[in-house]
Image (cartoon, rainbow, N blue to C red):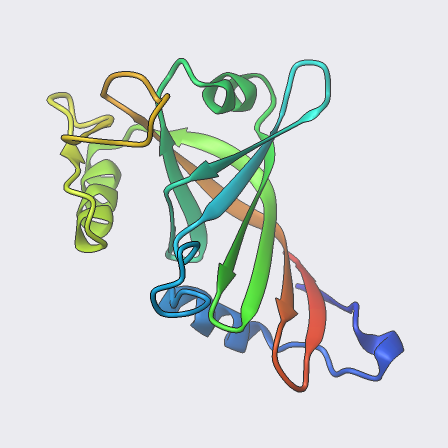
Length: 174
C-alpha cells in the first residue's frame, strides 16, 4: 500500500490505515440522530464522460463497499458500460472517499449475507426467488421494481480526512 500524507504541508501526520479501517468497520454516523447519518454518495461516469452523483444505501463490509440498485437506473447502466466509480461517506469524525470499480455480484451466498447485513441495519430486505438479487417491501424512490442488483466496490484508493484535532488527510493506494 502506498500512503500519501496530503496534510504534510500543514505539518500534520498521516492517518493510520488501521484507524481509518476501524472507523469504517464501526459504521458510526457523523452525529447521532443527524439527518445525513446514513447518506453515502456514489459517483459513476455518464456516457458523455460527465459525473453522475446519487445517494445510495451502501455497506462497508469485509474491506469493501457494497450497494444495490435497480437494473434500469442510470448508475446500473453507467457501471455496466464503465465500472469506474467513487463512493463517499461521512462517518464519526471523518470523511472518506473510495475509488474503485463496481462489479455486479450475483452469488447466492454473498447476496444472502449482504441482505442479512442490510436487514441488521433496519432495511427489511431478503434475497429474491433466484437468490441473485434483493427484494423488500420498500426501497429508495426511482429504483424501479425488485429485484435490485448488488454491486461490490473493492477500493483501488481511499482518501480519509479527519475532521477533529489533530486533523489530517491521507490517501491510501492499494
